[in-house]
Image (cartoon, rainbow, N blue to C red; front, side, top):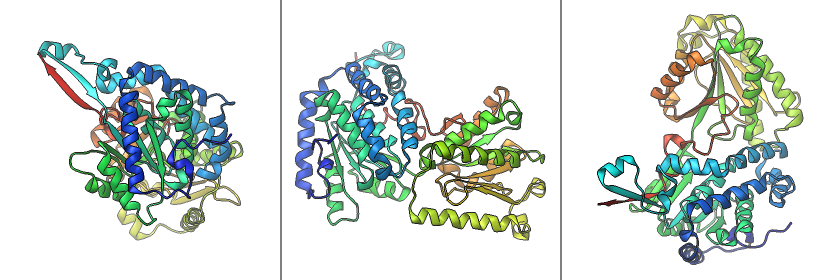
Length: 473
């Protein structure tokens, strides 16, 4: 299958992008939106998105086949990892789920079609309508594809013309999704434009500034420095939505480590570790294990390593860069040295808890002859960011409350906490996490598979894009 040249990103590196070319593209998008997309009912748009998603779940679908065929070389993810991640994403894009998202964020499915009032508004003599931005510009990250695809879905739900700027190495899957939308309805494709360039090329800032000046709303996903920079450059009258760097971890309660449930918990933990090779903000860096000095954390780490070894056979990690591989080797070596050494006086002074005296200082399990997976049992309970690519820390704690103290330095960066706890403790632990600032709590095994209605960083993803108009009677 050869993709037609529908979007600027299809034309490859030989295309010389200029601010004038992008300005003309933005004008065409606005015109197309005015003539068609902006006039569609929200239910019709939802059905088109859901139909397209359903096509991606068909193994014979040409766009899916191309993603699996060319995706590993383009993204670095193995074919099995791509299949699992894309299937998880597209299964979520059902009519029911998309309608629920609109109702959750806007109160009523009709909010985007006409002035509508809920019970409280009726009492106040008021109706409201939500309007999407005329031109929505997304600056996407390149670490994994689903956020870029979902940004496009949100823009379609608000019936906005969209420009999606992708990193050069991460444009394939967004392009394939855009082409599949165009195959469903050509006028959907006419409301989208995909562009790709490297920030290192001459004139890249001029191209970005042109898009920023044309947009009514800008979304940016990336590192914190990029978010700060883009927020500064976006005009004051333009809405800006930024998603910066986040971290996640899991907690396994002692009562779930029994013979009947521990295997299920470990399989879920491996699902979270291997999904997108830990590349997303929702991926776990650490699993904290509630251990009263009985070796529960050691047993968990050992069985986790065994399950990772088995998973590697059916879902290989895929290639990583030389720099990433070197970092994994260096960290492994450091922890292996620690595993045969004594606890230093400095470490004892930094971790002031009697519990530290009763756990092994360090133990390492890893894939033989490769960097494909690594499990580090670390007796130091302080939060430690992983180097990713299936490198996971297992840290014992005496009780759940200790985690909040040990993770305090990264408190503002925590996105998701995966839990394996019984129902009688779930409410108490979740309440503590919510008050500590965590925006998403889910079962272990679903950390990298958020529902469509997930409030990204605690904010309504769809609600952040719209502008409200109130009609008072």
